[in-house]
Amino acid sequence: MTDLEARVRSEVDRTRELVVETRRDLHRHPELSHEERRTAARVAQRAQELGFAVRTGLGGAGVVADLDGGRTGLTVMLRADMDALPVTERGSDRVAISEVEGVMHACGHDGHVAMALGAASALTALRGSWSGRLRLCFQPAEEVAEGAVPMIEAGAADGVDRVLGIHLWAPIEAGRVAVTAGTLFGSADSFRITVRGRGGHGGMPHTTIDPVVASAEVIMALQTIVSRETSPFSPAVVTIGRVTGGTAMNVIADSVELLGTVRALEQPERERLLRRVAEVAAAVASASGAEATFEHTAGCPPVISDAGVAGVVRRAAAATVGQDHVDVAHPITVGDDVACFLERSPGCYFLVGAGVPGKVMAPHHSADFDIDERCLTVGVETLVRATLELMGDSAN
Ligand SMILES: [Zn+2]
Ligand SMILES: [Zn+2]
Image (cartoon, rainbow, N blue to C red):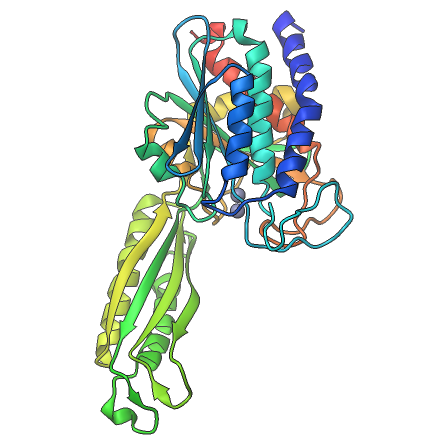
């Protein structure tokens, strides 16, 4: 074991307690997308204590913190998302439970923030071993895919050469890491379709244009975009998650609103699906005399890791948990707007197993979601090792 090898281990070990404590603190005080004020204040304060130059309020609650090494070199960004979900936590056998009714860290973002701060702390102690600029990026509003773009517009990604980020993943057991060169998560876009008809008396439908019936036809027709127009070898999803319209059983409404989401694993597919949703909705609605307008409300491209940086992360993970505990992750049709950062600079978003070994874990976003906290040190060490390979003196 080289000198640096031994120091990495001991610096990561030194962060363990604070990382767990930070994760539990954030878990007790979860904040919804766009409301991450307390979390942002905590991370800003912690980064300041470590000697980082901190900028706050980037694209909402976003925080960016920079620390320069001795010599010039690459700028590497460690990105962590901060928001929680509108879920009421179930179960009392937890090391930490949400103290905010109806809000819960049910996706593990509390751990993401804690791991990034832990890595920052270890890398600060190892400052003599790397060159360039280390940038921490704490992003709000990931769950609604509205956090990355405003941060980028506010300059958070300016000058960034490489991006690293972790998603804790409960279906994989703690002690394992999964890395993919290429697509990890799909695109995630949301849209609104407004179907406009002409309201009137429920007993005299022939004098109206019924947007409820037109919407029903639109919803059914949208199902054929995946089942009839998409290759069975190309995973894709079109979901209508909310339908709103009408006021009474005997009143035909003027309009109906549909909210939905589209997922794909490749950018051309993503664009095709969005285009077809708009076209099918307009055409089917017009068949009954109604009118459908399509509005793309938010979205992010697929999460794609650069092969070179994925190789760096794979080596870092193998040094952390052993080669036989590093897997290749298969693409998953969830989204993450870390994709917007990865679109600008090569990087790697990877999965760190967070499941209790041998136990079937509750899914992400569920009220029973939980993690095995042993995953946190694995994440910190992998981040530190990957950053050192990218910024270390041997890399320049
Ligand atoms: Zn989530
Ligand atoms: Zn998440």
